[in-house]
Amino acid sequence: MSFLRAVVLLLLTPLLLSGCGYNTLQQQDEQVTSAWSEVLNQYQRRADLVPNLVNVVRGAVAAEKDILDSVVEARAKATSIQATPELINDPQAFQQWQAAQGELSSALSRLMVVVERYPDLKSISGFADLQAQLEGTENRIAVARKRYIDAVQAYNITVRSFPTNLTAKMFGHQPKQNFTVQDEATISKPPTVDFGTPAQPQPQPQPEKPG
Image: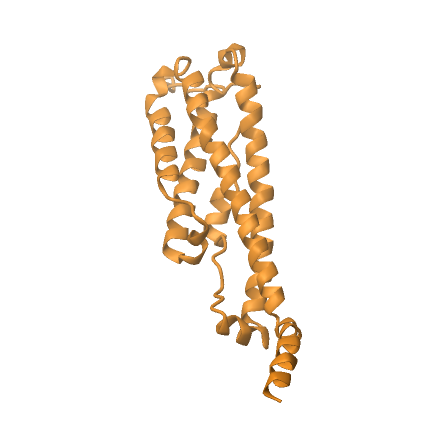
């Protein structure tokens, strides 16, 4: 009789787990992990472009050393944080990673604004290709980030909703970190990559003539 109960329980277990949201949690957890991996992949791609971009630009805008140094430093900070899958389960580490990526985005934006004052850059070999790659990478980051946000939102709803929240607690599933509104506004702003029109000097006010 005990053997029969064991067999029945074994057969019913998959149905019970499915009905209480276990399978959904596993599926959504995998989707979050996959989406997060793509986010990291695209941010790493951007980081890999930065040294080449700085090297190409350095000779033409040597006077802007502070801006170039800030980009190099921001990249070093952004790549120094170990972006592991566990990062999305650590609120403090996740916020530090976001802040570092935001600093790199800001530094790149400042660099691009400065570069607009140097139209000769367009003729430097490889610059146009780097410009296109950076622009494309920013678009890929936006897409990957959106997919991650959606995946985390769906997962967190399942973790917090009844009755699947009971299953989540039983198997140790916790809500995952998502991009905050404040950091998202900074990170999602792509660098300006329009080099067509150099910045025009502002007209200086003329001294008034004595009457």
